[in-house]
View 1: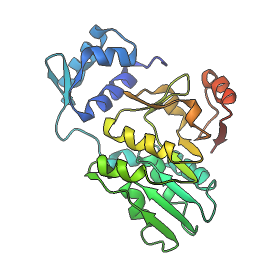
View 2: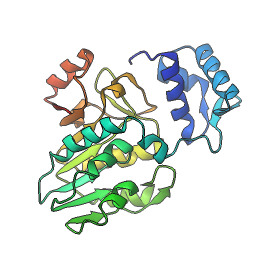
View 3: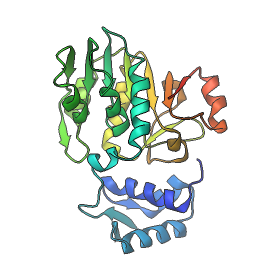
View 4: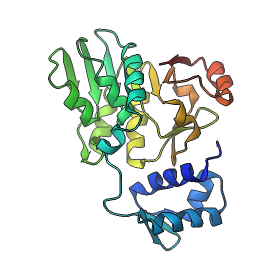
Length: 252
């Protein structure tokens, strides 16, 4: 795993606690640091009111979880470039799956005018494409995560098992040095894996900063990816893995 700067690690720790209580030992293993280092990070985050310390670990403080709207404005110009480059891969007549997240949402803004079917658990994508009558929208159903504007749970998962697509656009919290794709929101991971399983072509949307970030749960490895859309040349540490797996790369 790529070593994170302390500030980056604390951001990732906050992401890791979003789904509830996490343990010091698990965080230390995830980020490749000592338990003492994790405890110092947790103490600082708790002091700043960003999480709550509990015995053996931490949990997020109600109301502190950043929402979709807050995340959407971060690096918005980069996300728009990624979205345009990804949308250019879509052809009329195709069925397209779109993952949750703000980077994947940016794709939808560039799909207008195409004659396609979009399958998504991303409610922001639905809102964007709803006025476009040329695009058929398929929602798998499930439980609404209001803060992330997404659908999760067994209903969504069962629906996705019955669906296939020509192309799936996958978001991520971080990518490791072996091109492993990671996420910090555990309830979203089964959705991502089912989209991968149902797609003929899987496209990872990841700005180059994601290659220095981590996650808590491994979604897939490089063998599941066909294409990467990013905003700068990939780090040298992953180029050999990309080439060995025949993954195409588009730099927006």
